[in-house]
Each structure stands twice: as C-alpha cells, then as structure tokens.
Image (cartoon, rainbow, N blue to C red; front, side):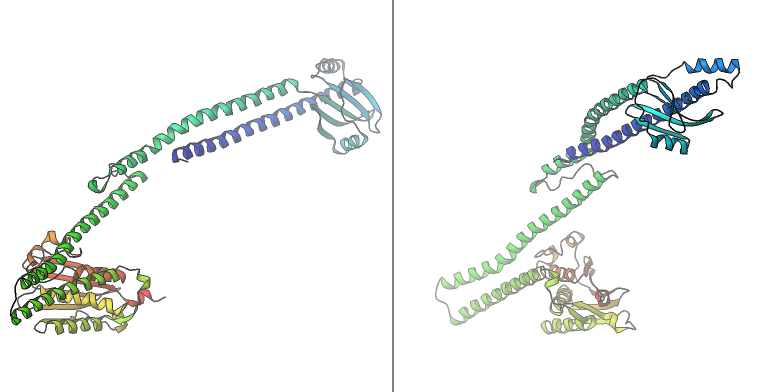
Length: 460
C-alpha cells in the first residue's frame, strides 16, 4: 500500500472516530435531556391530578377553578391511576399498561417518588399523604413529539456522518497528495541520478523541515558516493600503472636478452634487474594483502593491551634496520604520572605496520639527511604520535587523495614507492577506533598525527 493511501485512510479513520464519538455524545445527551424533561412534566401532572381529585374540598373556589383548568390540560396518551396505600384502586383514567404491581406500589410508598419506563410510556409514581388517608398517584404519558424529533436527529446524524466521510476521504486524498508532493519530487530527482550524473544534487535541501533533512541526507550520501567513485577510478588508474610498469620492464629486458646470445655477465645483470622488479611486485602485492586484512570485521581481529611508546620504539628500530643511514628522533611531549595511560588496545602486528609506514614515509620524503622527528603526546582520552619531516611536502590539492591506494603526488613521482603506506595506516587505525591526520606544505615539510584511544576506554 502506498504512503499516500495510508495517509488518506489514517486521516479518514481519525476524523471518522471523532465524528462518530461526537454524534453519539449529541444523541445520548439529547435523549437523556428529553427523558428527564418529560419525567418532570409527568411529575407536575401527577401533582395537578392529586390536587384536583384529592384536595378539592380543601381548596377555595379560585384555587379549585385553577386546578380544574390545569387538570384538563392533558399530556399525549395520558394515563392516571390512584391507589390507596393498601393497594385498593381509587381512580383510573386513560388507557395504557402502567405495570402496577404490589411490589412496585410498596417501593413508591417507601421511596416517595419512583420513575420508570413501560415500553415507550414513561411513568412517575408519587406517594401522596392526605387528610383522607395515604394515596399513591401514578401518572404516565408518551412523549410522541420528542421521540419523533429524536428519530429525525438520528437520521440527520447518520446522513451527516456518511456525507462527512465522503468529504473527509476526498479532502484526505488531496491533503496526502500535497503532503507527499516533496517526497515525489525527491524520488523523481533521485531516479535521474546515475553513475554518470553523480554531480547532481536534490533541490529540496534548503529548508528546515523533515523533507529538507531527507534531501540533505541524500545529498551527503551522493557526496560520499561521488568521492568513492572518484577514489575508485583513481585507484584503478594508479594500480594499473604501478602493476604494469615493473611487468613491462621485466618483459622488455627479458625479450631483449632472448633476442641473441649474451655473455654470462649480461644474463646476470638481466636476471638481477628482473629480480628487483619481482621484489617490487611482491612488495606491492604484500601491501594489497595488508590493505585487505585491514578491511575485515574489527571483531575478528585479536587485540591485546600494548604500551604505545614501546610500539613506537619497535617501529623506529625496524625503520632504522631498513634505512641505516636515517635518523629518527623520538621523545615525549608530556610523560604521564600514570603509565597505564600509555596503554592502547589493539593488534600489535597491524599497529606496528601503521606506525612503521608513517616513519618510513617521513624518511623517504626527506631526501636531505633522511631525518624525521616523532613526539608522543598523552591527551585526556587519547595518545598521539606526531611525526614531522622537513621534506618536499604535499600540495593542498594532492592532500585530498593521500588516503587513496596507489595515489602518489606529482612531486614524488621520482621517489620509489607505491602509494600504499598512508591508506594502509588509515585503515588499520580505523579498525582500532583511531584516526590519522596529514598536514603539509610544499617545500616546508609534512606532519602526520596518529591518534589512538587509551585502553581504559575499552575496559568494561
């Protein structure tokens, strides 16, 4: 069922319930008022009959005349019965069954006044003591006019309810169409968005209502999709280039070597060059494998408590083994009083790869001296490693793509590398609820900040 239909039915159901309750309340209280009002009229009629018939000898001529006039002003279908206290009938007037029983007469005698219904007839019984004795007067009548009016009211309410429901359904359908119009427009605009048109954005995102929030959410999602597709295109382009280059070199050298017989030294040179290219490919494939491992479910990675400073020193030692002529200076910005604040929870092998990649990048892109500086900073809830170099730096435009695998800035094309280090470090840190930030200026150097939450945040 469409939302428009649901809204119409919900709108109609709510108003139908309100109208039904309103009609029932009107009918009920009208009927109740009519019944009470007619009982009061019958009660007055009983008093008039009793005064005229039982106290005629006690009243003066003027009062007697007034009682007589009132007595002959009968109610519709009137029936009067007068009994003595012992149940003997004294007076009867009019046709109609009043349901008189000894038990009921006794009840009237005890309660002094009783009213009840006998079919459509309303009856009032009154205990009337007199100098001639104790009497029970029963007066009854049928409120024919008001009952007909009540029937007319019932018809009016039913017809009005049904007519109102027709109008409510029509109004609800129009209302739901207007309410769903922005959603319909959003659907039409979203349907126009394709892989080739990811730059398109929804036009209803400039308001403050829920529809605008939905449009803004869609636009943010399209921003992420556009960036993801751009990163994918960049990844495919750079990965193809990085994989093709060493293969092309290997194939070219081997083909040249096979064109004619060569000296042993020449074959050794070709094989050595092919081996170096194969090692580059192996490093490249290992980097891809590490990226795949860093993209798995975090719950499947075994984590332990580690000293962050010891992890940094381990990474420094490994970097120096690979680059013996480099210099990496590590110090503390603020050593904590509680050494447990240096604890982080994570996978030692993966975190070591992340820190090592950052340190090696700092050395690699500092051609003059291969000097990098690392500083450990203990924050309130995190522990940081700030790695800085005085290398060639990264342009502002290239900074946007440093976490795209295989992306390499234009000014470092001449330096050996594959563009895997920082993307791999970022994914590893995400698995550990950490972040990595890169700040850089061309010809001034680069600063990379690794942030990891302290271990106590994960202690239950």
